[in-house]
Length: 226
Ligand code: NI
Ligand code: MN
Image 1 (cartoon, rainbow, N blue to C red):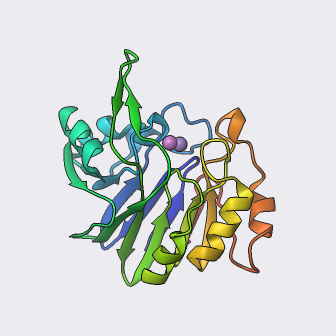
Image 2 (spheres, rainbow, N blue to C red):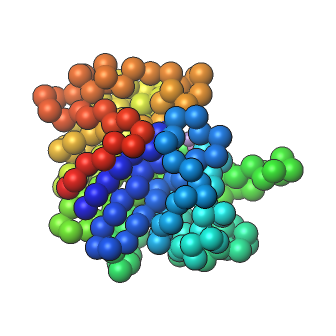
């Protein structure tokens, strides 16, 4: 399983011959190394409807005939925009041809602001577990710290966790460090920081606050082999 990070909450997974893009906020993301028009995923997974997560989904999905996997209300909205979607919801898992996807809870909001300023509410936000090749990756989406992260880690031993540390909209570094403990993830990568002024953080300081060897700072374009 080949996993790469691309700034903000953008994560790419290549497994079992398929390319999966999570929260592809590329256009307008000053921290990404990607160009939306170059992306050729087979699947796009969305954690919630906020524009800094949905990003270029509609354009990328249409051009590649990619399947968008998202919480039910957001999946329906994506379908209304002309893309193929697979609706799921929190607590539910489904086996795709690359592996299994399970949505977890996240404490946050979920709405999409259209170009004309119209706000569409897109149900509950989520985190996501991607399980393939005997490995489990957790992308927490945008969330506060919650004690059931312990439950998620107990039920699904996590090899790699992407946790927001930006504060203001999500967990800050101290809460994310506690989340890393609850999740018992082997490796923890900070995301959702430095993209906007209110979420300025020091990822190295965060990584250093975790237990020895657990924290890993990835820069846009960095990858991990699991
Ligand atoms: Ni959000
Ligand atoms: Mn966000």
